[in-house]
Amino acid sequence: MCGIVGIVGRSPVNQALYDALLVLQHRGQDAAGIVTCDEDGHLHLRKDNGLVRDVFTQQHMRSLTGNMGIGHVRYPTAGSSSSAEAQPFYVNSPHGITLGHNGNLTNAAELKRELFLQDRRHINTESDSEILLNILAQELIRQDGLSLTPEALFRAVSGVHRRCQGAYGVVAMFCGRGILGFRDPHGIRPVVYGRRETEEGTEYMVASESVALDTLGFELVRDLAPGEAIYIEMDGTVHLQQCADNPGLSPCIFEYVYFARPDSVMDDVVVHRARMRMGTRLGKKILREWPDHDIDVIIPIPDTGRTVAIEMAHELNVKYREGFIKNRYIGRTFIMPGQTQRRKSVRQKLNAIGLEFKGKNVLLVDDSIVRGTTSREIVMMAREAGARKVYFASAAPPVRYPNVYGIDMPAAQELIAHGRTEEEVCAAIAADRLIYQDLEDLMGAVRKGNPRLERFDCSVFTGEYVTQVSPDYLTHLEQRRNDLAKHKKDREYANLDLHNNA
Ligand SMILES: O=P(O)(O)OC[C@H]1O[C@H](OP(=O)(O)OP(=O)(O)O)[C@H](O)[C@@H]1O
Ligand SMILES: NC(=O)CC[C@H](N)C(=O)O
Ligand SMILES: [Mg+2]
Image (cartoon, rainbow, N blue to C red; front, side):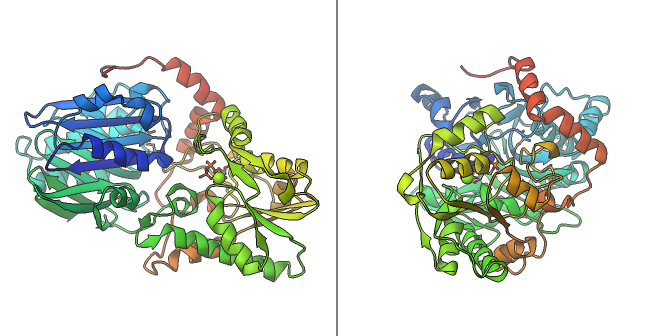
């Protein structure tokens, strides 16, 4: 789940882009990049593997000149983890375009073939985002080629919508001209925009989450609608246009469960409130199905499990205690690239406070159980800390199917609930009882914040995808991106790069 940002400013934007990426770091920890465009129309790019704070030195920041730029933090779902696939990507024709993408294309292989045979375009990496950029470029050439009018740009985005399948939240910069943002026709991935007034004039930002706007003093204008595009010219003129034939909003429900920061507002739903409601509903389920429960204390799994746990404790009228202390210097474990690293990180990241567990029946609460890495370790840690009974609750239903829209869950076999009943998952994580949220309750908890949200992408729970996904693609994804295959590929592609500032 990558993070994207673009700013059309009135003064240098390098620091603002950096700060926005820091705030979006929870969406991608593998690589980061910024490209700016100066007043002479020159691009300045810095991207590499690593966290935002490690990728950009002072010297890099000084070289990122210009009042307009875009940035990206990456969590790979296609290709490899090579620094060559860090974003933004660049293509020189037409107009000099750079692009950052959040999401995943499910017809990338066909598009790559088409680009080569039909459009005579070479794709140098395995990244679907490089493909998306070249489709945009080609669709723009297909317009009348020379003039970069908003109309031509929007027609090009319509062309992207017709050709690309899957999910995409995109920010793209046109050298010396402006910044384009757009969202796929199902609005699976989020994109918002906002503005701030300065003495020099109005500045605009396009970003994955509203939290990036807040922290930089931009006011949220609104989310882009599914299929909609925004084009902000360098002089601050804003154009908006619906570019899809049949748009319909089906946002990814996992954004609300785990990905987004709680202080973001997504499609008019305050993520924090949605998580609170998940907790209330899960609490009600326990009261319904297990009225004579013997839970002594509710303990959250930090960080994301906290909001849910607090509301559950309230609903059940049971004590809430922070029994696990999180090492603030360790990042999110779920989005780490390999299982060994993920497992090791859970132990490094969380440590139990013995007295909160000793002799008690504890209910551990998390937002979700995906591979089971966290829950397995945590249940063990609770027992080691002296708990009498260890129960576990998940604010999301069992995750049983691969994600194809920008979350790296490619292989069903790696999901702990795949092919297992809830009782079997309970046994697999060695808990005494396991309570999962019902899907209806999860959707209800989010929809309460915005009744217009009729549909969600819930494919990881149901196996039903909101776009067409061929069985061949699912097989390909599983083979190419399971943990073992990824590890091998990362070594093979380690040095595949064309241009990059050191
Ligand atoms: O079943 P798993 O495969 O372990 O995945 C689920 C866990 O991963 C996430 O935590 P993460 O550490 O990534 O981030 P957080 O600190 O925001 O909770 C999520 O909040 C769950 O705790
Ligand atoms: N998580 C994402 O949004 C990934 C974007 C893109 N598919 C990549 O792998 O770089
Ligand atoms: Mg967690």
